[in-house]
Length: 317
Image 1 (cartoon, rainbow, N blue to C red):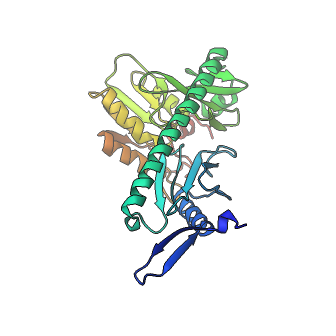
Image 2: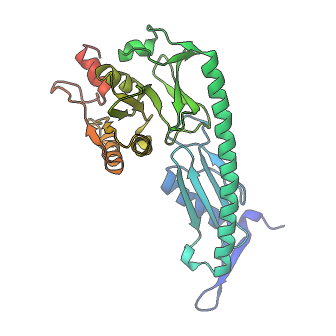
Image 3: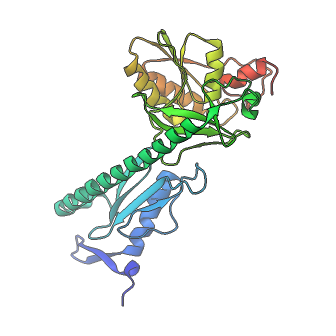
């Protein structure tokens, strides 16, 4: 019996009319290499024609945020992505332009079917996360002012609640629905509800009904420091650099007349200043201004955001 992984899966005629065979093993190796180049990781094993899920290396172990599927009934082709970062990419052995019209039609059909299935699975996963978030939020209680994370960051509890010792913060959409929770442990460790929607969502740090200014930052503690300095402003925490732009664009649409300001993390002590880069991109797309924390000359380089600046000015570490 022929091993399926090593069996020929596709043949085509080259210009000299000789047949060229592509084994599933070769296709899988090429597919994994493409995944690794784009996502920074690849699964150890890919089951042909099945969806394979694997960890995002930037997330916690077992997050299973990445996925891929290789179709082998014809020219090897497939797709892969990361639902945490919204990265999505299709892949064809050789190139898409080298496919025959029939192969292209078949591939489009496979991708369409896979996308519909993935969307249904994603919506179901997000709904389960939202249900868990609502339950936890209802069962939790307001955070005490002596929570270790609040003491370290020198901020008030605001809307934070406590669940199993961790701060629980609501992650909502611009439709005002609760989609997930961010949980921050006493040691500063952060995690979200598994499968919860994050793209385009935010933590509503400070939401006055009438205001002419909207401040958008990355982290919740940074938002708390900004809210302390600007009590009349609307303050949104976009959760991370990758979410700054989607939140800023949605905020511009939601409040078109607001003075929109991106309060950047200034990663000045790193080789790549991801905070500045993301803030500038978000400001251009959303037609917003950018503020940077004005660190004193003797402030350590590892300080990067407005909360770091506030703590430093208050004599904190």
